[in-house]
Length: 479
Image: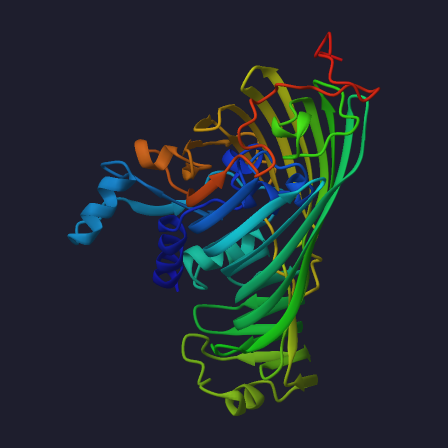
């Protein structure tokens, strides 16, 4: 048991970690990365056309274990691992967030995407493939069993109750369309709204949910389950194992530096220059929806007392063996299909201009997955991100707190050179020998076209239209 948990922990530790990509999420040149946190951000986008050629995200975070006693930073350990000389060991983390352990691992492969500013509206299309695993509700006692094995002596003979533990996973491809629109532009105020709609093609899924279980590990062999309530579902890998829909909704408000009456992005007159802002506030709901897997195995179990004489040698190889083991079940309802919900979350964002090209941003993301549903769980996050940006270069230093763990913030970085983006929301494992419980890496290759046909040949900022429609210069930029 311990070797299995250690192996899984190493997979988590060696994964990488970038759920919301806070380093690029607030950028005015962030393209689809900004719109994925709030689709309203696409309205009035600063590039006329933003094209994503390719990209990748890798993410892992857990509160249970850490990789420690490394002799070199992560890059060196990866090199040593290839040579079969990996150092360090897996240990229990010293802290736990909100009374139960959690973990999230995912990977994204991003395909082509494009967004085009059409006056006050912006339309975009794109695709990406996602693989996601989340676990939550792991109590300290269950964590001890996972790490030490069921033979853990201090807990032998003790009766424990598990309120809710879930493990959920899915892999799917999204084909999406986005639209955002400037609803109102008056004085120094600009209000926008946006929506993203995605068609999801499911490839595989697996979910197991303990809804309430009481058990006793009697000794080094016997396990007594006094009461159990659980639900499950799994679908084997296929090119098209399921179908579903997903959506994002968002609104954004900007307090601009200049009056915006008559402002039409990337059109003649004032629209040829990006509209600067004093601050920006946004609210969004992301990853609504889910995927239904039609041909999977699913069911609900409500069991009475079950005595397992030797839990190290349980003869379970197929459904019939499980049926025999659960012969005392009071109810077992099976079905051939099930639905996995997307990792829904609600987010608030705030971006403050400090000086020309310099900003500091705040963002919070709260998971909305219920404890008793087969919905993937998003990591709760808070981030503060200072950044410096120009058209051709950008640098950001996000400080991220996962699951509101203010004692263990992650420090990241993001660099953008025109359309090439490299970033991490947790850079320390790459440059230090500190314990590894999470990592992060993301990369983008994009192409931005800044001038629309209507603005070619025009000098940026050559004319600024005021409230009365004339082209006289605004006497004071700061409202």
